[in-house]
Each structure stands twice: as C-alpha cells, then as structure tokens.
Image 1 (tube, one colour):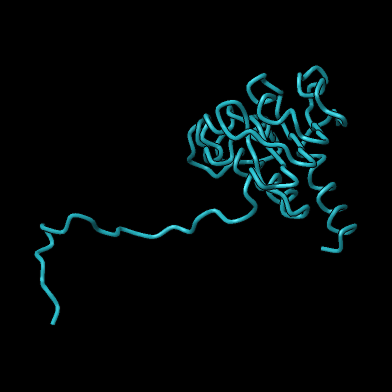
Image 2 (image 1 turned 30 degrees about the vertical axis):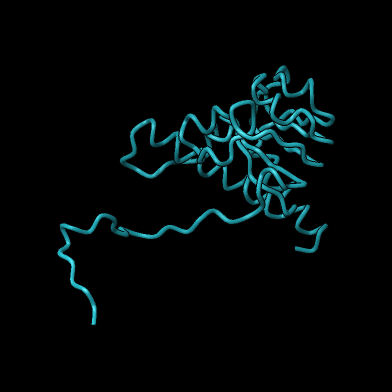
Length: 170
C-alpha cells in the first residue's frame, strides 16, 4: 500500500530531464579542438529572423562551434573553448580551457578563432603539438603554435574535416 503525501509537502520534485554532454573528457583527451570568440564571426551566415543583435551573435557562434565539434568528432577529440567564448555564452563552462578553466596537455591542441590571451595559453601551453587557425596574423597564439594557419576558420575547418574523414575512413 502506497503512502499519499500532499503535493505541497514534497520537498523535491523532478521537473525534467536533460541529456548530459557525452564525448571525450577535456582532461583525458589526446586531441582537443577549441573555439574562441572567432567562431561567431561568420558573415556568410544569416541568422533566423526576429533575433536581436546578441542572439544573432550567439546563433552564429553555435553554428561555428558545430564546425569545431565536427572536427573534434572526426579525430576522436574533445571540444574546448576560450574563456571569452564561455563568458559570451557560446558554450558551457565545462569546455573552458585556461587558467580559470581546465589545464590540459593533449598530444594535439587545435585552436580555432582563439587569439591567445595569456590566461588561455597558461591552460594549454604544455600540449605536445599546437595548431592555430586565426585570420589575424599577429594573434599571440601563433607565438606558441608549432603550426599556424592564417585564414578564416569557416573556410578552413570544413575542408579539413572532410579531408580527415576521407583519410581516416570515417
């Protein structure tokens, strides 16, 4: 026989469920593909109508992080982010790499649209190989990167992802 408790006396209620973020843990990942504020700078994208300027920026950033995530998925890596991207609300804090996020040391760190603020560099500088993709040739990230690609991540990531898919048979 069940016990009936008036709803007003129930201390805790389940109001819904959400899937947890799956994938590779940042701290355990051999490969990390990270995005920064640059993921929101795709002028070719037209956000849905009715969004204010802030919502348009966030929508563009989420589309940019889809490219970062696709590359990470192909190389069995984790998705990381700069503090600027997290602070802007583009991606949850659990992805933050840096002095105020997670300190990581993967075999390969790919920084996409990350300028290279000192706090971010402190969190990933011990990575074995660092590859930077940024359209600013003077971005500080290039001083630390072993390989640098000066260009727009929106032009570089899609063909890179497709080439790796073909090369890795995915």
